[in-house]
Amino acid sequence: MKRYFILLLIISSCNLSDKNQDSAKGADDVETNVLSGIDSMHIREYVEKSFQTPLHSLEHQQYLDSALTIDPTNAWLWQQKSMPLYKARKYQLGRPFLEKAVEHNPEKYLDYSGFMRCIFSKDYLKSISEFMRAKKEFGDGYVMDHTYNFYIGLDYLQLNKFSKAKEFLLLSKEQQLKDFPNDSPQEACHYLDWYYLGIADFELGNYEEAIASFDTSLMVYDNFADALYFKGRSMTKLGNEEGAEWEKKAFENGDNTINEDNAIYEIYPYQLFHKLNESVRPK
Image (cartoon, rainbow, N blue to C red; front, side, top):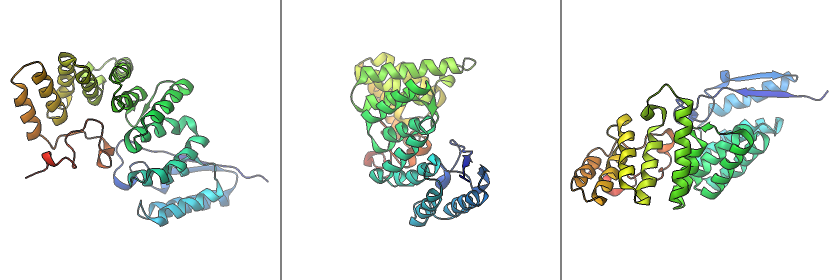
């Protein structure tokens, strides 16, 4: 008899920490609905053992490989193989595994792949292509707490296509205002959307508009150093001498930078206050 099984995983993408941030919390989160009991048992055993090993270890990968010998079409297992490699900045090694996840479940992993290209491997043109495909095939959505349009906007910022970046960041804002109509604008639209919309206007020379967006971002994250800095820069560009005070305030609050979960692995676009910037390190 031909054997089938379905491996279902419940993932909390926002509040997982450290090793399990993009993975399951443990074997109890893996539910099976199978016709082949012995195969499902082996899958569960291999997944449990993978969770018991260090995330970046060879053993972790080997246990996932063993599970994939049972079902090589399981998209989640392929994603689990790719994720530790991306976090170790081994993008070329992780990419084929993530492509397998997309191949077997594009509805679940195409947008995630676009996110990984945008924030991790910096393949901006390919990120745009994947998000545009996801929008076309599955509609506008969210991945890793942000809209597809948000990441497309970041991609265009990094390609110095500032008008296109603003176009998609405005789409992201409108999408969130529509999705969360009962919230105030600064709450409905993520503070990073306001920040990057300000960056797009800053790069376009629209300094007053940029300041308005930075101010809205600061309404939610009041000591957000990166927004404080670019607000100060914008004020200086307008001839306002108080801009220097805002830049000084930014450096005084340098620990309050972009706080996305994955910022511990990667520097985000236009993130001035990060651990590699010597000018913001403690003296």
